[in-house]
Length: 344
Ligand SMILES: Nc1ncnc2c1ncn2[C@@H]1O[C@H](COP(=O)(O)OP(=O)(O)O)[C@@H](O)[C@H]1O
Ligand SMILES: [Mg+2]
Image (cartoon, rainbow, N blue to C red; front, side, top):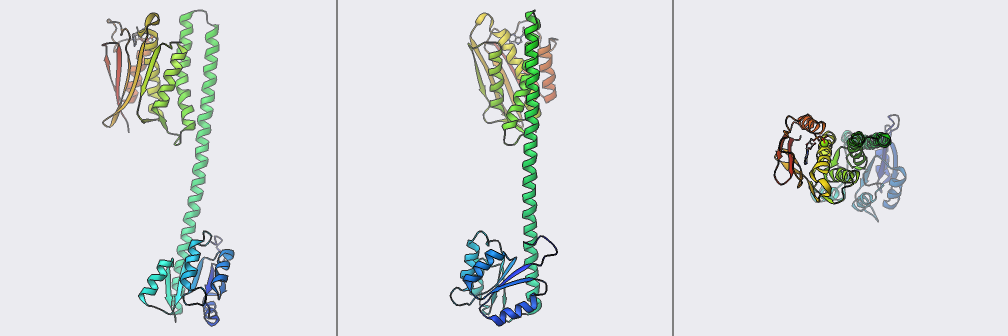
């Protein structure tokens, strides 16, 4: 298609009668670039080499008739989008239907009114131009979208790398600390950062770059924590179906899971006791329900979670508030934190 306004639209005229071609050139030649052919075979070649914007096609011709030429044009990838208009002496309804079935967009009956011919030709050229423009814009948009995706992927990748560096630095500092309680503070700080690192890693590889697959995310956190506390005798169970979380919800839920699983590993199974940690994410009406449960020794009786001022539980309470959620704690056969929160 001619995108340059200076270029004239190209028309290919196919008719076995040279005098008809002359008439058409006289009417259309001034504002259009015309190529013509008197046989089907040559017309098909010309269509491929000149890629016209419109083809005017006679129906009754020796060797190959207009229907056959039209079908051949539509079967060829290079020419299938070029609009074809029949020039026909036959205004019989069946002939016209046959023409449309072969892939034509319009027809004019001979002898034609010059004004009518020009009006129809102009309409189809404008339609074609509009279609080409839409296709061009679509291609541009797809390209821009892909560039945008690459940029987002790159940002996640860099954030992940920087968080990794922060984790390594905290690791190094932990090794320099003598007191084991102080060292555990460094481990906890590193593990919190590791949660965010994990999300960015998953988002680099996700197709949408916005949805975090919950099962991969929580499994990753749980396994890293088991390794970090060296508690291989404790079995993790993660069940989330195919639920995904958006970035902000994933970060908040990840930090909550990190605190609760850390607590289970630190306190629920003292002296090498074996057990299970179960993590469950389900849909609940318009929201979701996240359960972190262990079958350990349970939270000490005197401890009131709502009023506790220790960092882990304070963090969990404020993260649940951020989600606009509620907390239920079950203290039977271990400990279960059940968090319900709305999602958009
Ligand atoms: N799953 C659990 N099993 C047993 N005790 C727990 C559990 N979760 C929390 N606790 C108790 O709650 C206390 C407060 O936890 P938290 O606020 O995370 O602080 P920290 O982990 O720094 O002690 C813990 O010290 C522990 O006694
Ligand atoms: Mg804690």
